[in-house]
Image (cartoon, rainbow, N blue to C red; front, side, top):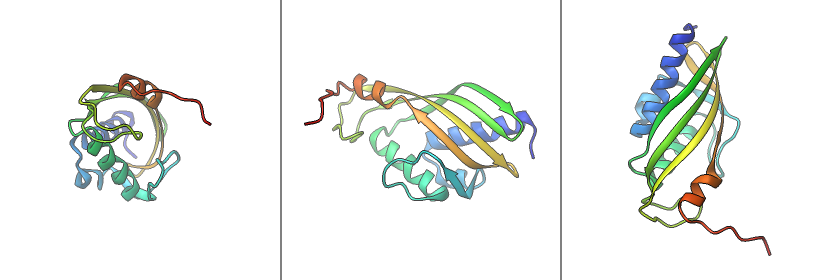
Length: 141
């Protein structure tokens, strides 16, 4: 298993590949059977599901990029905070394109085995993103 700096490098590679919408690069960074503990609705399992999520984000934000703000390695896990930025050019959370810039903070916990991600937990500030896109919150009927 790579040491802490090696795991950070793999994590950086994943964030970079997602920012580039590069499914091929993810093949060497994420296990085919990765477990995503917090998938989006309709997301298939494994690496293909992760790629599904990545492509859907780029459909909404074609210029999306990620910057790692913090990363802490302990054993076979890394905890990271990422700032995703982009321009809202496609539907996102049911909101039609606005052309507005958006910044979405996400927190990740990733477990690695053999130098690839095998488990992924991710939580993003989707409410903050929706509000920055001028979404209106309405109570359920």
